[in-house]
Image (cartoon, rainbow, N blue to C red; front, side, top):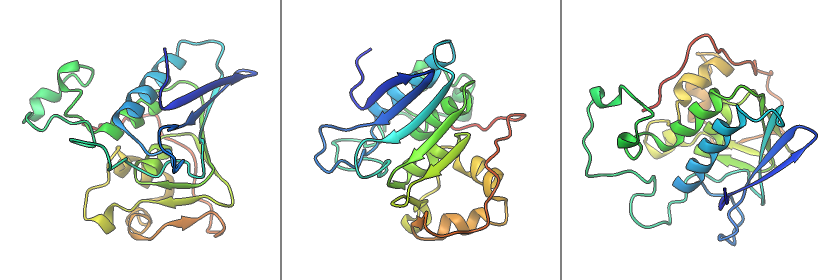
Length: 208
């Protein structure tokens, strides 16, 4: 497969997935529906690839991922606004009939959560919006000194996406989760008490 928003490299059993938008001169690795599809396919295929024992995800430029690319034409999330699905339509989340009504970021985080190989986020710069929430489904997050972590949904008056309301409380605890969502960009240079980086696999989130 030809990847247009990702770069893949395998070294000694470790697949490094680099978010890369060469079409964007700002080098912020902004998220698109195409990137969502490529990430979803990457984590599905890695399960059956015995040459890959672990996955690292990082950004190509000065950001890990600056969030959704809001500059594209039409629905920036790639959703079909003519559809009015009901809960009954969501019985089979793998059905292609509902692919363009599901939460775009949620498709990615569920693919990461379903990955049977360890997944590590190497956050090399700002991770904002979906750039932050996609890492919550990973097994560990390592931040550089220039990294910034932003769950900015409260400031925009929108609901957190990508099943982040399921993952976040399991990482930082339920009391801290609302505060984490309401604060400005958080820097890796701060030294808060470390939350647990473990992930509970006994139950599963659902992201429509």
